[in-house]
Every structure is written in structure tokens, then in C-alpha cells.
Length: 469
Ligand code: NAI
Ligand code: CS2
Image (cartoon, rainbow, N blue to C red; front, top):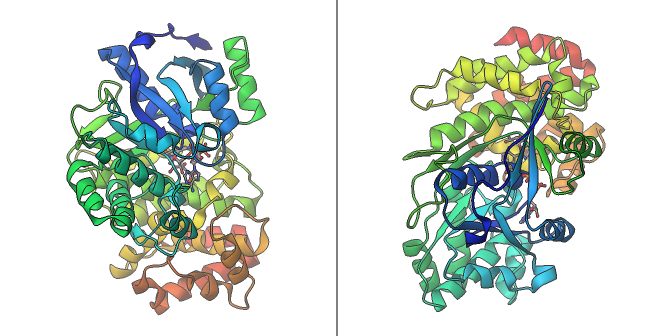
């Protein structure tokens, strides 16, 4: 079944450059833009978006310009495909095409009110919640005049904005990080302090950094997904994106001035986001990362393939309810069993073709919040965590035995995984494992046992872990 909603439910000629989206990739198209689209349809307004990227993706932005910013989102599940034409984007910006200072210049324009970020976990150049001053990109940005990192670019823009005498704005992170607002604030203010303490003070006083929990499964596009869209639409759209129907956005209500109409588009504005963030990061993303590394040892390539396995759905349910849920302060009114079952149902969506290698990418940036932090809670409370141990073991075995997968720390990780004791060598790398865990003998021994069992016989190791909680 296909359905096309009426086009342009809001006058696009009223839209002004009020939102900058930095890191405009797949997720940006299918999540924040969809909220804004529905919000504008409800309330009207002038909240137009400039889509920007800093490194790759000039062609993608230019293709969007050629389509006057219009593109389609296809929400797909079972035999249903629901198409929306999104018209929130009014322009694009890329430093390599528009000039090194094009993004900072835009940040200094008076209409700009909100900057959305989807720059991936590694884009924050942070370590333990603070700016990593040893990061080569940060060092280069601090030494030079034209910034390359997202954090250096934001600070350059805020410096120009302050000099122009405009007020502050809101920087809203939509990346999968715990307390992503505080993380963004620490990175931006930390960078500014290195350059100009007065600017850092101005940012602390004038700029707001709400945290947010974002959820919608949006896999990278494939030739097949473009074909699905062509089939439903009747013509090709190279700017289109295919995703699941589900979407959720919980945003800390902490904006400079009036927020864009995200709430009218379905977002929840709340005082405290952390319970939502932790629940989603540990249950959904923790389960994703577990599948991403266990799945290949059973011959699977996608999340939906894994869900057809005889054991993996039970592995995930056990991880979510027996290991992760007990580490959480749940948001009020949440039935965690219902939440877990809904996640498992979402994972069975065969229309998505969500590749395990995509989820496995950048695992060094994902493991701490998805698995190590909850393991630390379980170790401290003396609760079993056999599935989490298997997930960590699968990662280390995968680093040793599978084809390389993109990660900013790929070289040291793969070198460590080739050592005589791969578990000890990988887990000793800086910035991964909380100190309290690294020195805990039971933690190391559990991961070692899981590693040995998995290397011997993956199916038997999984069945054994299922018996242990
Ligand atoms: P994508 O690969 O389509 O886009 C990634 C964007 O991040 C690109 O614009 C790229 O230029 C930018 N980027 C990458 N490395 C960067 C760096 N070091 N500095 C600055 N910018 C950088 O990926 P997608 O799907 O848009 O996901 C992006 C992020 O959105 C994820 O890492 C995650 O934190 C968040 N997210 C994604 C979801 C999904 O299902 N795709 C769901 C929930 C959150
Ligand atoms: C995934 C997420 O790639 C990954 O690491 O776990 O992008 C996941 O699809 C989203 O967080 C779902 O909201």
C-alpha cells in the first residue's frame, strides 16, 4: 500500500534561515526535519533550515539544492509505505564548496536561533565528558584560523555572533550520547576557554544546550531502498530516505526564546531527559550493539535477519529486562516490559535492511554508554550480566577475526585484539572501560570466559549465557 500526503502543507516562501543543522545525513532527514515538517503544518511560522556538513557529502547537499530542498521520507513496515514530502530545508552549506568560514558566518546571522547537531559520537572530540585537548583535530583548530572540527566551527561562529552584537542561541544535540546537552556544552565551552575566556563566559551565559533523546531507526540508503521509493513515488528521488514508522523525540525544555514547533510535530518537551536517554541507550542501542557483534558469528548481516534466529530474540529480551533495566531509573509511567517488546517488534522490520556493519561502526564510541556503564552498575550490585559479557567478547573476537570496520580508534583496537591476551589488551586501551571495572577481577574473568566460549562455539556460548541470568 502506498500513500502520498498533500504537498507543502505550509507556505515555504515564509521560511527564513532560523535553524542550522550541522551533520545533515540520513537521520537529520528522517527525524528532526519530519518533526519540524509536521510542526510547521500545525502552527505555520518561519522556521526554515540550512542543511550543513563539514567533511564528506558536498554532492548530497548540492543534490538537495537542485531539488529546491524538497525530498521524500518513506516510512516502511510490512506492506505499508507512507510517503511524506518534506519542505523544511531552504538552503545548504559546506565549507569546501562555500568557503572555510561559511558555517561560522551563518551562525553569526541575526535570524539564526537553533543549531541542531547530528555529528556522530566522535564529532564531539571528547573524552570522559570533556573536550579532548589531545585530539589532533582540536589541536589543529586551536593552532589555526579556519576550523575543521564541529566544535571549533561552532566556537568560531559564536565568536562572530558575539562580535556582531547578536544574542545567544540554542545548540541542540541529537546524537546518541548520554547527557548530550552537557557534553556539547563542555566541549564548546572547553574549546572557547582555550582561546578566549571572555568568549567562554559569554557562551555560558547566552547559549543554551538542552539534552535530547532521539529515536527512529534510519539505516543508510541502499540501491534497494532507492528502488522502493521510486516504486511508491512513481519517479526517482536521490534525496529520499527510508525509515521505520516509529519516531520519538524527548527534548529538555531549555531554549533561548521560543523553540521551533517540534512539540506540535510530536516531540515531548520535558524538564529532565536523562531517564529517557539512559533507557533508550541501554535497551535499544545496547541491544543493537550486541547484535552487531554477535550476529556475524551466526552468519547474519542485518538486524531483521538476527530476529529470525532461534535464540537471538530471547538473548535481547534477557539483555534488556534482566541486565539493562535493573540499572535504570525509569521515566515515570513507563512499562519497561512493554518498551522492550516494542523494541523487539521494531527490530523485526524486514523493510529496513539495517546492516550490522553500520551499527558496529565506531563501536569504541558506543560501548561505554551502551554496555560498560550498565555492566559497572551490575558489578557494583552483584547482579549477573552474561549477555553483556558475550557482547563485549564478540566485539573483541570480531576485532581479531572479522574484516575491519570503521572506527576512529581502529588501529590500536585491532592491534590489541591480535595480542596474546586480546581481552586484557583491548580493555586496557584508554577511554573505554571505567576504572572501577578495569581493575575488577570478576569483570575481567567473566569477559575472558565469554571470549573463550564464543571462540569455541558461538551457538553453545549463546545458549549457556541464556541459562545464566
Ligand atoms: P550519516 O552517516 O548519514 O550522517 C552522519 C553525519 O555526521 C554526516 O553529515 C557527516 O558529515 C557527519 N559527521 C561524521 N563524522 C563527523 C565528525 N567527525 N565531525 C563532524 N561531523 C561528522 O549518519 P546518520 O544516520 O545521519 O546518523 C548520525 C548520528 O545521528 C548518529 O551517529 C547518531 O548519533 C544519531 N542518530 C542516528 C540514528 C539512525 O538510526 N541513523 C538514530 C538516532 C540517532
Ligand atoms: C544504532 C542507532 O547505528 C547505531 O549505532 O544503534 O543509530 C539506532 O538505529 C538509533 O539510535 C535508533 O534510534
